[in-house]
Image: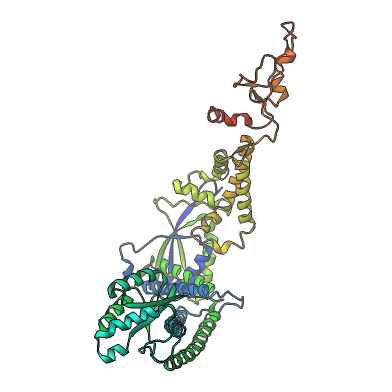
Length: 553
């Protein structure tokens, strides 16, 4: 009867020895039949006895979440090799702290190495593209001999240098690097306006690469800007920085460029080896704990629950024991006493925990014992209001009435079958999907899987009553019992004397008027006039009428 009415409850008082408190609470938690009262409601969270242990558990859960994110990022899955026993809480905390420190150091080193690699990749692109653009002998500062279509532009730059010194006429300045492709158009326009056209910009797209400054993939382009004069150099330098460009060294002579390119290639090879070694080491450390993380997480959550509950106990300084009060179902008292006995034996305490049933005038809490089939409905009913102690439980009938009323509202054969199939799959594979129950989105569907199945079944049933499949009227049980002047292809409807399909827009029921009345003699045949009724459910002829809603209601 516990599902129809809340169970009878007792207020119990526990006297637990200090040494046995942790193991006793752990055994009571496995039973799950006690609701403890807070005996320290006048104290803040920082004044309680086991606040440091709760903080330690919170810190370990944070590290375990961090480790779990690392495992997901590295796509490392468990190999069912068995979990490592955590040992004491302090040992597990020390181990997790060392693991977090080591992983963060490796992540920092890996980020730095990847940044260096992306810088070298960009520098390599700059050197290779610059070698293609400047196919000429001598230095960049000398007048180029082969510039393709840009010979005139370079000649203009040399003419602009006529007013400078002899050394200035020999040399042209240049800045090279990489810039986001999205900024290239504005970058070129700003350069043109700032230098009044006294520059030459060469650029080429290199695709999506890792941006060293943002540590994210960005589509970039290689560029090189030629200019004359120190003032132009200052302007170009500032413009490159403002548009998120990165500048790289480009020597004047071809021999120096080739030497620098060879140096960059060698550094890239060495850096790739270091990155691979770092990644392999990090994956190796994570693979050592991948099978233990779920077990450790459950263990720490239980430990946190134990210490959180112990913070509700009152400490008796005189007798050096912990005193607790809790509500317990009367039917569970034997199991509670057995759990207390196991906890005392497990801890090795010399004094058994004392249990007293206290007489009180307080109103006990409401406790309904639910199965996996009724938990979803009970949660829906509790959202509207909790029944009082020993009061009737409306969820007992709502298990059927709620899905039925939903089916009346949602009734449709097609949608109902799809919902019933979805609920059935959740029920059949509930064991394999149990690990997703804590997910915020999927957990709601999983916990209400039996409700979804029943809602789909009743929606399908109501869909047959409404004769609708995906909101389209269905004539699976025969044609409509109604005739109209528009149904010229129905011989039965057109056989009634006096009907004119061209003028008839009203509807009439199919009947046997032709047999009950002799139209030639103008007299009755003494046969009873009967009207046809649709064999099952709502007549689909109502689907396109103005009073459809009133008729269905």
